[in-house]
Image 1 (cartoon, rainbow, N blue to C red):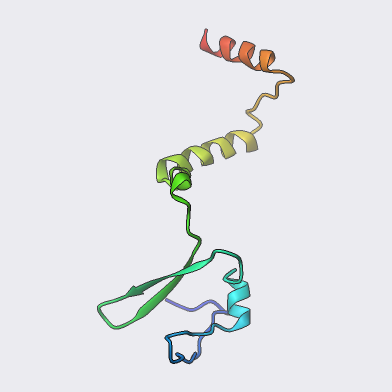
Image 2: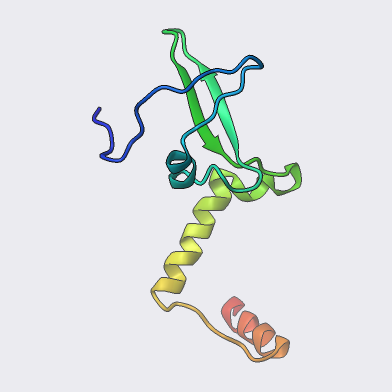
Amino acid sequence: MTAQPDAFHGYVAVQRRGLIALPADLRERLHLDEPGVQLEVTERPDGVVELRPTVPVPADQAWYWTQRWQAREHEVDDHVSAGRVAVHDSGEDFLAHVDELSE
């Protein structure tokens, strides 16, 4: 596996309380300077410590990020991109359209 041209490689110090400071350009490029971002930490059997950027999802919104829901979101995006959509000016127009589809 080859590294990205702008991928960071270097050393960071571990401070007394276990704190590390990531270089500013790395934080900016990976959006680690945004509110709520966390790093997932995985210790591998070979001694490597992996850090993965992640944004925690509130429990009441976890359904949106399920594989099934995301697949359905992509289907909708495909329909919109292909112009297979209908715009209605009122709720009555929408309901009439739904009735037509179910006939």
